[in-house]
Image: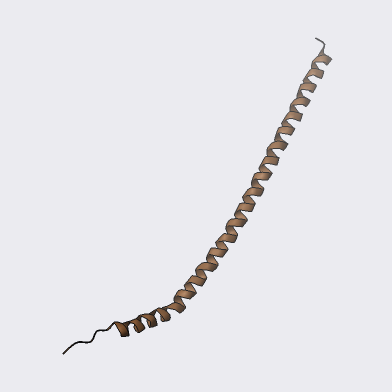
Length: 88
């Protein structure tokens, strides 16, 4: 075979391989971008929900702190009616 024909075949095959590799790489990067967007969306959702949970726990702590007095007075109120008198 002629040397120039061999070079033409080599460059054609090499060009075809580079094009296929570039297409495959761009496809993988496109899929990776979509996955990373989904991960970002999920992480934002988790961050928002964790903020909500933190806020709810802060409200619960405040309710417990302010509710202690109410609970104590409720037991004191019920304790007045629950005491038995001793019969002589």
